[in-house]
Image (cartoon, rainbow, N blue to C red; front, side):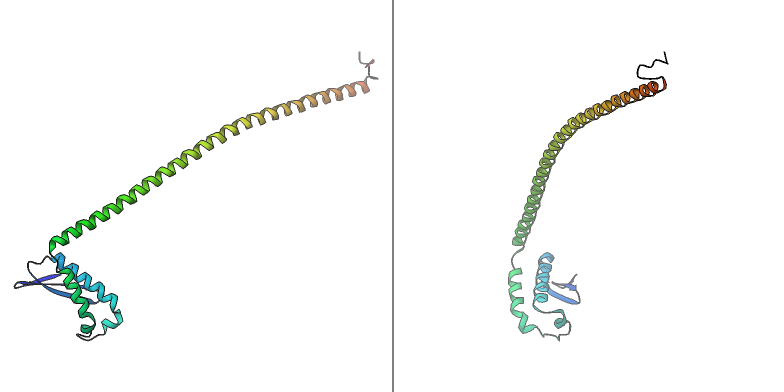
Length: 177
């Protein structure tokens, strides 16, 4: 949030009960002010525990934090042009990272497609071998069934002959003619 008063603007951020405030001239870009506030909040919460700063009295951290605050003010006092260049460089870095990830994903996808094509070829070869083997097994089983059928017919004919021979008086079947 920001509030303007005369030629000054008060910017502040409240996060988890910690209020960070700065005062700037009106011509100072609010982006620069909020970048400074974020840096102050980050460094302050890094250096001091929440339990400590939530129960502290006014100016309790002045001696411990004033050098850090001066350093942050010096860093953030750079002109906005540097800010824009930094922001553009940061965006370019992010775009570069995204593009690198996309290229990695495309390459990984290409590798997966190559693996899939290879596996498909192997599977096709196995399917052809399986089909040929299945045809051979089918033929063998048909011949085996045919042999058993012939053996069964011969056994039945022999059985019929034996029954006829016994009922007709001998192997020549003299009584049945």
